[in-house]
Image 1 (tube, rainbow, N blue to C red):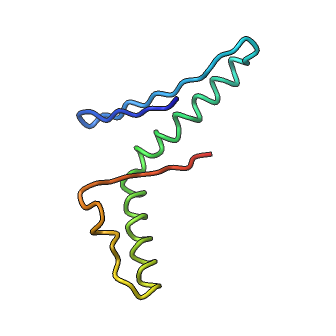
Image 2: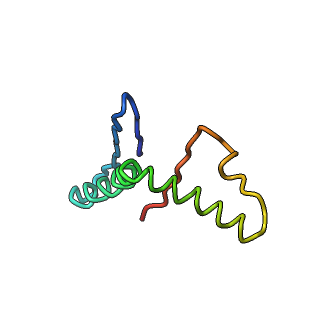
Length: 85
């Protein structure tokens, strides 16, 4: 389970693990830190990620000879999807 809570300009990141009778605590701790690092990286780099997404949409539209809808769709809203390995 991974969650992030944004409140008053502070991001609270939580990640958990499932411990079973044959779990290795050190491995579970590493996995939990990896899970939390995806959110941490997203928060720390959010402006860069959003800007790259906007620029990527603009460049794609220009390559297709179309008007970019990237800046219109969802105006005022930001959604960041992170694939973190």
